[in-house]
Image 1 (cartoon, rainbow, N blue to C red):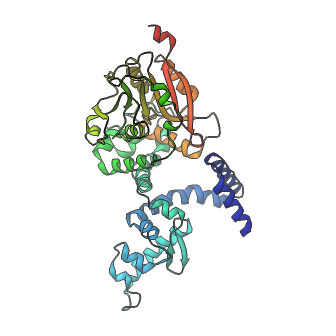
Image 2: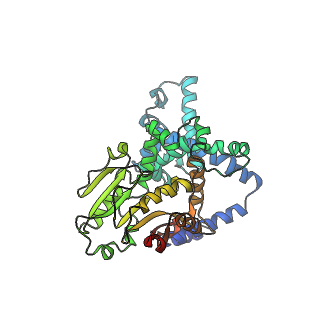
Image 3: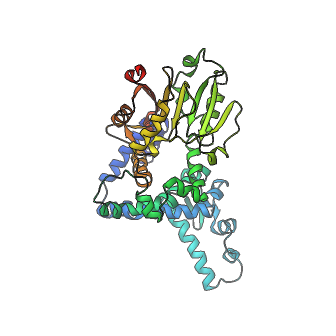
Length: 407
């Protein structure tokens, strides 16, 4: 058995991302096929609701960071001391503990014991714990932001979804002002307006989003022929406009990878976002609302990453129409978004799709859905290049339809 597990781990570690995900899914299918009724209830109804709560506690107490930063095992008492727990809990060899002290000690041990039982940490002996790979993952700031975002912001919407759909007779959710989010958080604000008013929740989201694009990760820049397409471009003409680009990570990546590409690089977002934007040399930071006419005319690239999936079709069409009216025959829109295959979609992607539905009344789109929406505003997909196929991540090169060019 041990040799079989080692060989399986070796094969998985050497597989590329797509094959690894496929093999892991097949292993899950095998495990599901062996489940009893109790196993299924525990996995879906119990473990998957309790684990995020306990992980959230572990992050608050910095348990994952403490274990990840230390080699070897840590005793229960050391963990209590490092997490700032009541010092009375540390009296292993001191005076006999009171009933209250013993209760506190037991409570801490119960949390750690549960974390170990579901693989969040490793139990190495009686009252001894150490880090495993999951612990190290949960010690990363971006992953901690993700847990905070999913638990604090998305969690209430997931809980509210069943009753919301029952009440609305399972109609599609298409209005960002009357989505599950508003009912769950008892607000009239849209999700992003609510986040702006709740800075801790917004910070969790920003940490999570930043962590999804670490340096040197696969991006559209690895698959698109930027240098070939911009050869001879005028130095004083706009070459790259990142519409709704946040604080400017994509512009910084563009300048770092292609420092000699001629033309102006421009970051656009709302004024409150631009106020916090990176001061990247060679990048102009411009306040702009993408629901208003695009002020930069004739750029080579108008780039969107993770913007259009935040909006239902009719709102996304408004955004695209504003850009299309600023384009000339040399311009293209680069849409860096998930494009769902017709079947076999990974659970992370299907989960993101439902998160978009509950929070923003929007969706992750299939290629036919993208084509239909683009067609309605006089645009068409010229090319589509995946840079991370297993995650459905790629860049669509979108241009004006021939009829639109003639007009």
